[in-house]
Image (cartoon, rainbow, N blue to C red; front, side):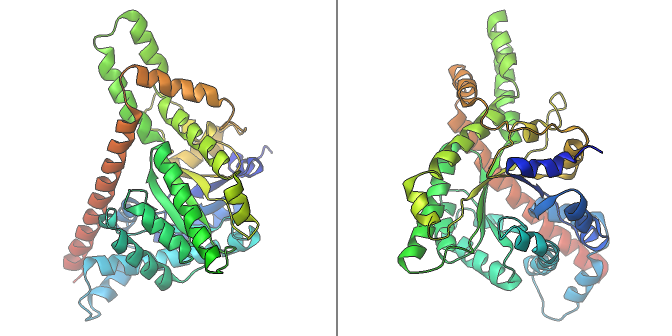
Length: 377
């Protein structure tokens, strides 16, 4: 029998995490099966995932009814965190063996701070600590967005000893700032004589959305392009996202091979792994495993939604691809920019949209809980 490609990723230094959580897969044995049979080594969540989970079934109704009738007059946000904390805690317990066997490399479950705090450094720090302490699991990661205001929060939370998943990353330059914030947090711990061994972090670099927006800008240019230019434009479609992520990986390799990091490594520090998120293919004309196959390499994680991991298990090819041709990746970005498309503007727009969409999902989630309050009362 041929090897499961999801498990084969581990030979190339990449971990498969599942971008999904719901009470049904925690309770019906599916998550345990994913760990045992599919090589799943971590879980990521976000407000959109929780919205779908709560809306799609009745698994949460019993706990919701108890919370509504508790007499504590809890807000929709407080109720959401009660639901989420139970799911995240249960997932942490299921992944605890992976966490122990990998000596803290894998086995993490991520929960996001309220997206409305994306531009509020102090609010992010406060809520991250509150969630981390309430859940109280060593294999919990708190997701903090990589906004300008998020960077000092990342540094402070790493300094305070939390595991952090830095999310909503689109630009290589911002990613370099994230790695710097991580290292500064560790350096401050060293100065204060604190231990580095138990701290883990990933930087979640979003992939497919870069193509969605760049391709749209390229298509607009097709309208009045001559044949030669049109050919060039078509040759670039669906190439920017992978190139951008491969350049990010090049920055990752450089940062974690510096003397600055080596000094920290000698004291027990881990690399901050590069996690690829938003890896489902949005354009049906592209391969449904494009954003997995082209981004395989050591020190990385790919967090996949259900359709993507199933497709990759079925027909994914496993090889070290991520740094196969960094010059070609840089050439793609140069070509795109030569057409007047600024990758800086693309990634800035995506970050702003990402924050807004997560905030909208969070609001929809709270509205759903209020609807449940009425229907279950």
